[in-house]
Each structure stands twice: as structure tokens, then as C-alpha cells.
Image (cartoon, rainbow, N blue to C red):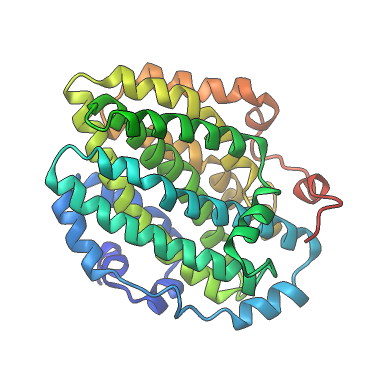
Length: 339
């Protein structure tokens, strides 16, 4: 039997869409456990290319517009809208991370991430227009998607701008660069993006609906696995060299917002029973991803638990009984919005 990692590592775009959701979901964790260096991650990037323009969305468009129940359609639109903004923002904000890269291998890998984010942004613009029916002009579409953003998403965007501007002002400040990496690679990609991608892959894996979107999000999960591994490598090095406080400061501000937002944008309940093991696992993904990443970078366990407790303070009603979701909760929140 071929090991799961070989299946994910060498799979074509079409093969990724056919893999079991658990195999795709576990890939980032098992890749991170190998503690690969930037050069190894670069080699993987060369071998794992796919085309955003080649993704077929015709079946997805017809299904989304005519066959999906209203609640499910609203949930998926909200989650995908977050990715429309998030993937473009990722592309826009990577320049400061590149500018402050401490060595040549880091810079070369970060250039591959820029290419990935461009591909993801192009794909999400296609999904927004061809499936959701948003305006074809990316600038107009971004405004449409931003109008659906949760408050935590808006707060994170403000924090991202503040931290990235500080690094641009002094690109040779290593601690400012580590702060950018902590926010971008651990919070935005390592928790927020990968949790959303996994939830969509897991949810759509239970149906034959939206095959283009499922395959695309599976491919994005594999790309994010490389990005997350790079971030963990950089942060592990930073903590080892005595810069933990700079990293912790960012995580203390950003991670509670990300954990709340991750839970809020889970589309899983539309496919699965609210009290099913799969639904409970989906809602726990963000916290598990964060705690696992913190162990891998050598962070203080007491600080990690403090951050999770802070998320409970931000929204206690969402973290006390995570698996008991009210049917139609998200639909009620978006009542009156166009879907």
C-alpha cells in the first residue's frame, strides 16, 4: 500500500479531489512533523503545480445556483467570501515578509509562496464570479465579499496592516519580521485558512456536490502545508534565538480573533448532524492546529493555554459547548443579505 503522504505529495489536481478528506486534512500536520527546511519546501513547490484557470466550475455553478438549500448556500457563500478577501490580502501583504527575509533560502521559498497566493487569488476571483455570481471586476468583488466579513475578520485585517507597516519601515529588524511571520503563517494560514479549507473539503467529501471547488480547496490545502511548514521553521528558529516575546505579543492579540472566526465560519453543520463526531472534530480544528503548532515551535505550553482561554473570554458562548450548534444559526445571521 502506498503511504498517504505519497498520495498527497505526488497527486495530480484531479487525484487530490478524489482523496479521502482525512488524508488531505492530515497532510499539513504530517509535513510539519518532518521539520523541512526552505530548500526542501521549494523542491516540493516545483513538483506540485496546478492551474487556477484549468479548474472546471460549470457543474459547481449550476449546483450552487439551483440545487443547494438556502441555509447551505448562505454558509458556503460566507466561507468562500472570506477566502476571496483572504487570498487577495495574502498576496498583497507578502511583500513585507519577503523584504525582511533573513537569508537567501528564506527569500527563494517566499517567492514560491507569492506565486501560490497569486494562483489562489485568481481561483477565488473565478469562484466568486462564476459560482457565487459576484461582479467580474476584482475590485468590486472584493467590496462585495468584504461586506460579508465578520467583525473578527475586520479586526485581524487592521492588525495585519499595523504589523506589516512596522516591518516595511524597518525591514532589517528581525523581530519585526518574526511578528509578520507569526501573524501570516501561524495565525492566518496555520489556523484560519487551513481550518476553513479543511472544513470545506471534509464537508463536500460527504456529497457529490461542487467537485471543482472541492478539488481546488484540496489543492490549496496542499499549498498551505508548505507555507505553514516554512512559518513553523522560522518561528522555531526565532524562539531558539531568544525572540519568543515578540512572537507571543502578536499571537496574544491575533489568535483569539482567529479562533472565534474559525469556529463561526464552519460550513460543516449544513452537511452533518450537529452532534456528530465529524462536526465536533471540525469545530475543534482551529484550537488543535494552534496548540500543535505551538508545540512544534517550542513555545511555552502555559502561554498557549492562556491564548485559548482568551478566545473563550472574547466569545464564551461559542467555546463552552462547541458541538451543540443551533440549526440555521448562520442563516439567521445573514437574514436579509443577498445570497
